[in-house]
Amino acid sequence: MGRPWFSLTEALKIINLAILMVGLSSAWWIYQTADRVPPGLLGYEQAEGIVYPVYPDDSKKYLRDLELYGGKANVLMDGLRRWFVGLWQGKSLAFTISGVTILLSSGIFYLTAKLSVDNDSDDLKNKN
Image (cartoon, rainbow, N blue to C red; front, side, top):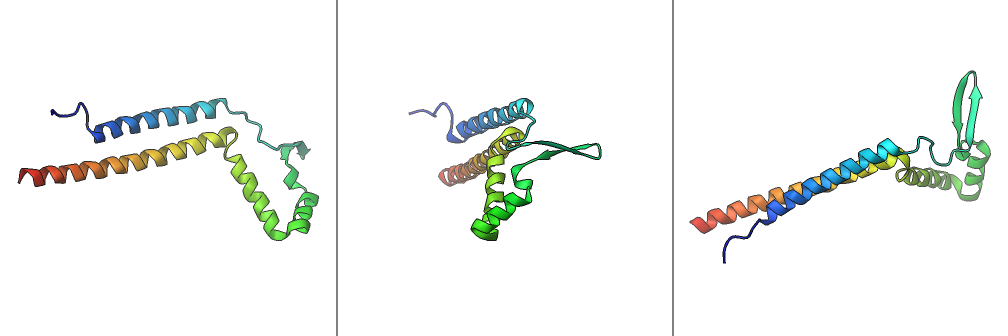
């Protein structure tokens, strides 16, 4: 039986390159086409010639009600939930996708390097 058409490390390098290209180009496209209005926005207020966005959690009544029903932990968890939901919308989604792409690609790169080193050491053992 002859040598395979390509090795496992070569296949992982091709897969890694494809993941990087698709992931980063998707993140760029999402960033370019994402809506500039943040989610959950109620409207805008103007004060002293400056326009400010208004969110429901900006009101003291909302925060007081959250704390009344669930304590400080409820206020903290509501903020954490809003942050997590915000990762998957608009321009934040582009940064999330690029981060996941880079982490996945780094993991595959590490695996490829590890397999390459192991194959090289096996080849040296077989020659001796």
